[in-house]
Length: 289
Ligand code: C2E
Ligand code: MG
Ligand code: MG
Ligand code: MG
Picture (spheres, rainbow, N blue to C red):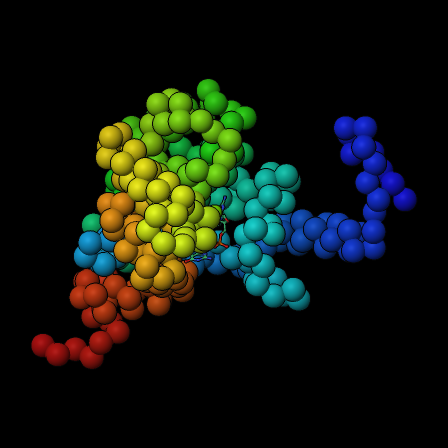
């Protein structure tokens, strides 16, 4: 069997493609109930200061525990949720839960969350952020909204006004996966970013201080200084990668070297080990005084 793909080409459907299609259809239907059935949860990955190693904030990363299929990564269901429009409700849930968790951390820590294209241009986003701030008593100044270049491409003007509004409320804006999309550097002028997150692909193949990827990381570090943007390096897995990121003077880093995405409790434990005052600590320790 063959089907036109819209560009005058024909693709053959193999059994494995059919299985894949069925799986996606199944996931899309199941996703409708994921919130109601309490199957979604967040993990929190620390983002650390590259000079002191101290945790400065966490990124909220979404997971879905499907009753039969197990834990499904966002790479498998975010685009489905975008297609069906469910991302708006799911995204609102993410922001609420992320802020709820952040309210238990020291108030100088930020909470970063990912926002997709459809969410960014949905009218409810601003109200959703304001509501999460009010409900959980956390300042918008602690919130970092992460968007990717592809999010901006299709809705330039609408996205721009939402980003300005979020910033006016106090939120920071981070450009995620920097360097991999189609966007040109003119995006850095057009959109009001506070942070750039260097995509982990630049660290992945790192091979010596003088390879091209190392030069790119250093150049992005310099770009950040010139444009007064905070640079976050993603996917730092090895001490060598950290050394590079530091020599490039990237202020913040995130990756398995520091921690994997953590459960809410593990995130609080990490903070406690660092000596931070975490809300609720008195309830978890035997009283001493
Ligand atoms: P992202 O925002 O770029 O998040 C970073 C991804 O890199 C996460 O994958 C994280 O687990 C992974 N990672 C962190 N450190 C390392 C490392 O040292 N090595 C390697 N190999 N990977 C590392 P994850 O959690 O699977 O999320 C994938 C993507 O899904 C995210 O990329 C983000 O674009 C999207 N996503 C996650 N949660 C949400 C959400 O709540 N809403 C939306 N719209 N998208 C989300
Ligand atoms: Mg992100
Ligand atoms: Mg990223
Ligand atoms: Mg990514």
